[in-house]
Amino acid sequence: MTTTNLTPTDLQNILAFTIKLARTAGDLILEGSAAIQSAPSGSGVEEKKNSVDLVTEYDVRVEELVKREITSKFPTFKFIGEESYSAGARPPLTDEPTFCVDPIDGTTNFIHGFPFACISLGLIYKRRPVLGVIFNPFLDHLYAGVKGQGSYLTKGVNSRPLKLPLSNPPKPLPSLSQALIAVEWGSDRNQTTIQAKSDSFSRLAGDPSKGVSGGKMAHSLRSLGSAALNYALVAQGGLDLYWEIGCWPWDVCAGIVIAEEAGCVVTGSHAAFEASMDKDFGIVTEEILTGRKYIVVRAVGDSQDEKGFEAQKRIIREFYGTVADVEPS
Image 1 (tube, rainbow, N blue to C red):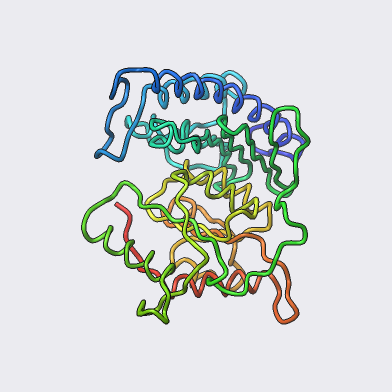
Image 2 (cartoon, one colour):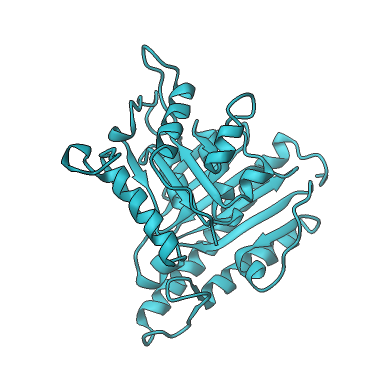
């Protein structure tokens, strides 16, 4: 297999390797969870930036395992990992195949024993996400997708993969008022950021007839605590929309592929959305992948008056007309 021209067959072979690796890493994540839950308070847990931006020894161990296996199998592939990036290893993105890995996405959940944490393994090729595997070992849910080849959910190692989205055909989405929306507080808790997010969340959930100016009264808001799993649930159709500011490529790379292959639309900031309204709408460029602002809308079925793709645009436009644009830190 060449490193300069990956074929669909190459990507299938890489996917099989990546799924096996995700399950191996999942065993280590479960081991770590059991160790943390039985250890003295605070043991093996350190703060990255503040009390909500955490890292455990298992983040590092899982990334080392993943990097070792990838290097052995694909020695010419490049590697971007959350923990190695935090430690100062920051290679620039190139056209070469590059694994983009979050060893434990949802570290805070992992520490608390809240079973929404996963490993996220993405592959970037020619600066675009082309392959993704997300595995939640606590629920034994594995999401996988390859560009142009669909995405699937496997519930249990011996189960039949289910094509995403699970609803076929996808349901219409008339407005934000009928949406279940994923949002996150993030680790940046300064006054400006937290106030902007609070105001945005209030408008999304609030009742305009009860005094919430600009309120959309969405069905509800959800915070899973894992960007990758938020993407996976939008791909599945269990969430209608996910919006996040402050994530990194390793948080979203795998999820972008899985979501796109399930008929979702992924774009970046409000400005990026407006700039791509013509032919580039729905294309995840390097700028969007690394832009740290993301929105993804589930597959939307056609209605009598509107094509699903146009409905996705409308929902994003309605959303960005409701929330505040905050700069990530």
